[in-house]
Length: 73
Image 1 (cartoon, rainbow, N blue to C red):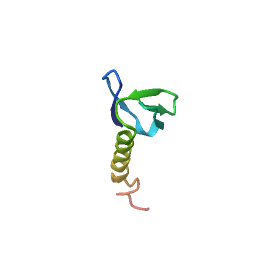
Image 2 (image 1 turned 90 degrees about the vertical axis):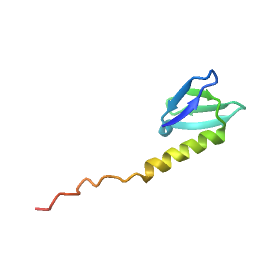
Image 3 (image 1 turned 45 degrees about the vertical axis):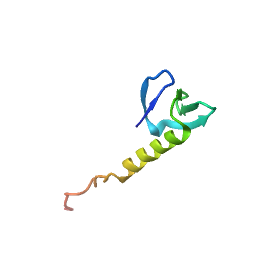
């Protein structure tokens, strides 16, 4: 999830996994795979950086081993 600010000053948290495109037109427009669009105050670079930081955090977390602790019979 990333935090962004709409042009009217409202803070919004978006699911970074659902972002389809980010455009600078000159306002930054985030389009989700659902078709929803958000015009935000952050620059294209800021949004991209936040998405990359989110993905680094998610991908660096240790994944549980589903068979750890079980013995074969």
